[in-house]
Length: 325
Image (cartoon, rainbow, N blue to C red):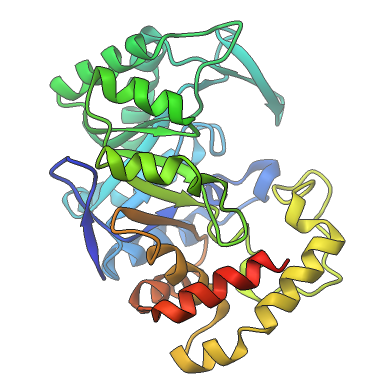
């Protein structure tokens, strides 16, 4: 497993990280076997993946609780990242969405962050968080200046409650604001070989400011594994429902694209999953890939992508395949 420094911090993380949104369960993902989830997280650590990502809103606290149980007796072996800013315990903030009977609000005020971190520390059963992200950024009518948000995060860092600061779902302008008020070490954005919007502005900015770029949804929630057929239709209300690439005409194009990479899979003795993860890693020295998994076999499938070094011409060929969609 390859390890890279997170931004300008003293943290070194595996180039592939484990995402635990699905482990939270709920109506997005359905019910899980928590014992199996714990085994998966522990297997992740034993196979060299040392960065585990979660968030309070994943299962409304449940994902953090499961992660806490899984790492309790091996805390020193793992880096934990979690997030702040999405609240459902009160109505203070800008309304975002409703799910499973709860109304969620965006709130990255100083007091909101201080409250969030204490709840996360309790659920994770730890006294520090390695990487602390703002999950979504502030919007009207509860607009909070980045200076206030960073003031809270820098204070938490000085207190030893967090070790590095991250921001998720940001614009280029917001990144410039963050670095103006403190050390931003990592940003987390949606990025896959078929969704490359971040390449225009965010990837160059991350490189400019020595910030790690962590790509989430690299497999487009399973679409890029090569296991889906053209007749697949997401269940209404599921995490895949309503997504662009799951529309029948787009799904069919992606399935054909993946089928066209059979020779590459043979060349590298791998699956489409491994190819697309390896492709992302090849996009820059500062790129980290966040892969979700609920079962050990899913985890093992993702990890293999970190071991593949694609030839330059194959990286370009894959990009050109997508441009033809």
